[in-house]
Structures are given as C-alpha cells and as structure tokens.
Image (cartoon, rainbow, N blue to C red; front, side):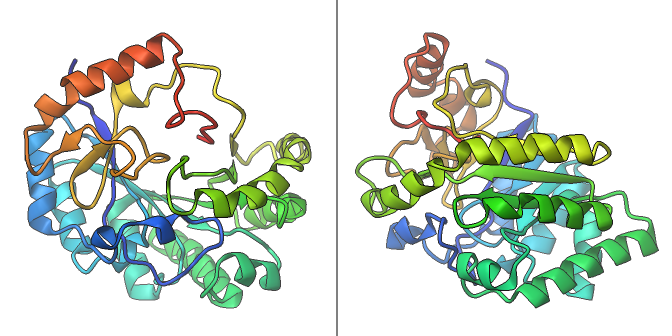
Length: 307
C-alpha cells in the first residue's frame, strides 16, 4: 500500500492543564513529559517522504514543546501543511505571529462559555485569559492578513451541552472559520488505568446525546455561514479510513491506529525509530488490522469511536 500523505504526530506529552475528560493521566510514566526533538522529526520526514499534511496533536499542549518552532520551520521549508489544537494558554502576541506563520489551521479548545464551568472542566485554565488570547489571535490574523483558519473545539458532555448555542453565537461574532463539537467518550479501553473511573462520567454524558444533536442541527440552521462539525460517539457502523490513509505517531515513535486510540501499550504497529515506516505500514499487523476493518470485525480498540 502506498505510504500516507497525512499523519497526526504527537509533539509533546507535557501539559499545563488537567482537563476532566483528558486521558493524559493514564499515560505510563515513561511517556510523561516528553518532547519530540528536531532530529526525531527529521527522521520521521525521511521515513515517510510522501507526507504533505501533519496535524501536530497528542496528549499534551503542542506549543509547550521547546523545539516546536524549529520543527515547524523544518517542515514548512519542505512544503508540509500543519494544523493543531491548542488550549490557548500560550497564545501571547509573539507566539500568535509564529502560529499564523507556520500553521494552516489552528483550533482553540473552548469547552464552555461560562467562566466557572470552563475552569472546572479545563483545570488550571483561566477563562478570561484564554478568551483574551483567542480574540488577540483573531485580531492579529486580520491585521497581518494571515490565511490561517481559526476555529474552536468543544468537547460536549452533560456538564456543558446546554452552552452549544452560546458557543455558536460567540464563534459567529468573532467570525471564526469553524467549530468542532465532539461528544465526550471513553477514550480509554478496558484494562487501561482510567477506564473504570471514567465510566460513570461517560454514562451521564450519554444521557444528553439526543439533546446535543438537536442543538447542533438547530445552530447549523441559524449560522449557515459557520461550518459546525460534529464528532459522533455512536457505535461505529462504518469502515474507518484511518488505517488506509494515515496514522498516529506518538512522541516516542510508536505507530498506532489513530488519534483516538494512541496508547501504544494497548495497541501499536511498531516504532518508526526502530524500523522502517514502510515495514510498519505494510507489515503483517497493519494488514490484519485493515482486513478486520474491511470485514467490519470491530474490536474494543475501535468500538464507540467518537471521531
């Protein structure tokens, strides 16, 4: 199978927040507080010469990586298009100009338009600061006429679903390029450290699933100029394209099925720092995985996928 043109790459596992729905806390200690290096990135590009698009995102805040601007510069010179999702905490004026230089698309996580709810969900964050940074990002983008698309990401649950309309109103007023609403789901699988402790939270979130969808449809009609994307957490009943067209690579080089199932200790196809990517991409494990997807033989790794 031809090598992919797109991947999602984890630039760091460091983070300055502790969000309630994040599975970072389930990471093994060996994966915590790791940064992708420029040399690692160069190795990945050399191993996958077909790459054109990279989403810089994993279980950490991408802009925390101390090498991030060097990595992006190296990729841009080689024609790579970059996107990312950020918690917005590091979007000061200097970083904003760099973001607009290197990223073709950036998404800021805004899980509530209510300061108290926002700070409960995104622990360690200050609502006022993040909103100020988002507005600065929009203002500087217009000032320098940058082409970077700017949007917001909203993880919907029983804690915040009733704020979908106010989120859409805010996004429309700011003239954002898009909104991505993803239903919270158990991003861990049976056997992982945080699996059982998150089940009750997920059960509560699923009770408002119908209302989430109703609000999304209602706001799509109201804000026709604003693309509102929806990540649905229903039981997966269709073939996923991830394993045929792209993959997720952890900060340590492990190749996993996708950005939802990125714990290499649960499942991985191999490590790009230990063997050639071609051997991984066309290896037996990945071929069997693709075959199971073609046959609709869903497993716990892919079931209830919210992407």
